[in-house]
Image 1 (cartoon, rainbow, N blue to C red):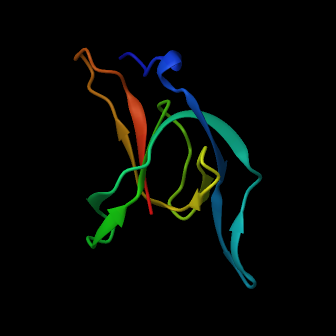
Image 2 (cartoon, rainbow, N blue to C red):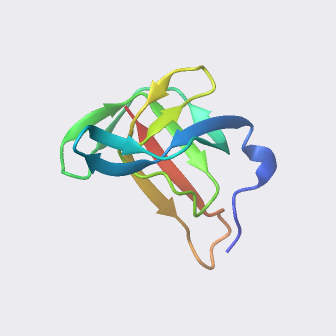
Length: 105
């Protein structure tokens, strides 16, 4: 299985991973920067609960990137958004690169 080439990940995104809820509201981990390929375009996607929602940004990351839904994700444009869905895409034996795809609000 090949991974998405590093030269393709031209952007940097900052992720504050969602850790869960506390008595004072949601808690987030420290921000980490990840190389990514970002497309800020509008697409209709399905959320994990089955609802159809509009994604205004799509982010491709290296496989194994840990971006839980509910995290804070800062795009290269400076806009902060929240992941709607996160999918790991790989195709063992096929000549396509494995990657993590994040659909954002």
